Length: 355
Picture 1: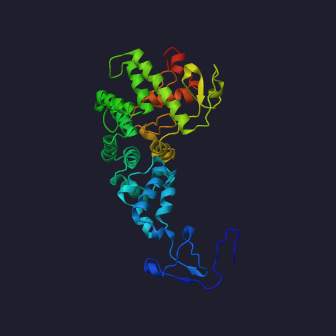
Picture 2 (picture 1 turned 60 degrees about the horizontal axis):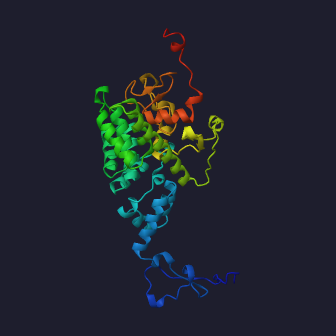
Picture 3 (picture 1 turned 60 degrees about the vertical axis):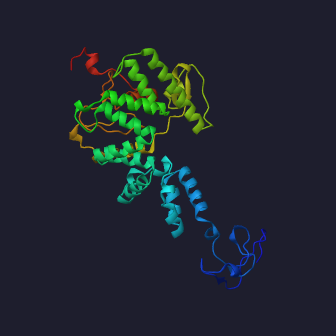
């Protein structure tokens, strides 16, 4: 029977030719998309005729542009050939950050093995994501920090910044384990690689003289540069985002966007958190993940998800004393996103310091 596209579908019982066991001379000439021009004849799939290096390049492109883990896993389960080629180090090392965006509710031993396999094959995104999960969620501090360090050595900016936060807070150890100089060095390296939160953290450290000689002008310059980079990043990621250049910030207060470049009154969509931070937020949203008697708190910035590893590790808002932050960058961003409209003086300040 013919179709409008002149493609002929077999009407009689087809003669099936086994894959890869047929000689080239016995295979009829193949038309477009691997369809035989002879009616009543079925043959091997077009994929079988492609060389391995071409299939590897296609899989690498798929990994680097995957929007979720299912985009890649669905290809692996298609056939034995794609499963074998898809697990090569050349392919696994090219995975995008969204390819490792595992949901906390779907966490399992197989997901753990998949991230470890990708990390062992050179994927810095997998190393960082699994390192964050092990350090904060599974409380395997040494292994988690080692994986983040492995990613940081390969110039992975989020891993460098995460290690800087660990050094600033002394996470995983006593309060005396804080190393401000190491934190500043890691933060500066991450900022040099374009990490926005690291640049913002560096600016606040310079303004406050935290771990470094105070330089208000230089700190302010870093903060403005961080805002400009964040604005450029959002416009590249979302070209349809438009700027609302109005002097008031009513749209930001109504939840319409994140007021970056606050002095100019620019409103843009809120930045998307890293999949590793999103996993932490989902993981610790379950009530039994943190013992209520332990006194440990989460970072109040919704895009962070980091928990305390000891009591009173994070800094509190000095006005309301009701929110906690793992870093100055999280505090500054949460202030612009949400806390500015919610912060009210604590009762102890209203009562003149009396409880």
